[in-house]
Length: 170
Image 1 (cartoon, rainbow, N blue to C red):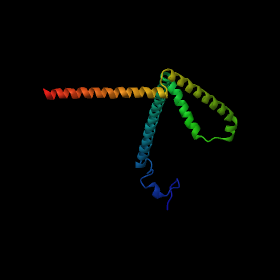
Image 2: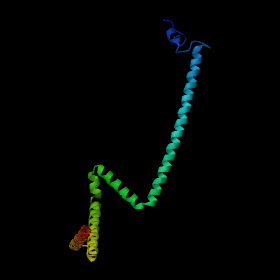
Image 3: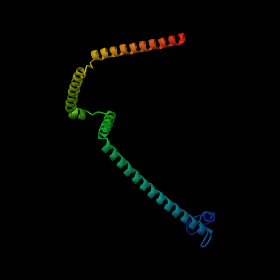
């Protein structure tokens, strides 16, 4: 096997894929490959720049929309944030250190929330009782409404029957 000056076998240099000599067909292929590589590199760079610009624009738009949503409905944003935090907290495992450090605080928060809920429930019951909307009051009003509805149906049925009889007699 014969070698060229670059220590490649002669068959490799004459295969048509490599350089066929100064000014030969291989130089044209090398230039074409170089041009194709540069063209691909330019297209890739342009695509990257476009994608980066679009991603930045989408990020700005999303940030703007989120800001507008929070400004227009801050309560929903807070509730959503609390819900997301609760989901994340539920997914993360508890540690002993966390229990030692946050246990007393958690109990205080839970007790405070329980007292607030009890107070709100009692205040609501008081308001409903004043309006006559207690369980017994509502049952009485529902019974009264049902009696009136049944009476109205009977009256309209009687009127329809009377009108039908008069039509038959005539």
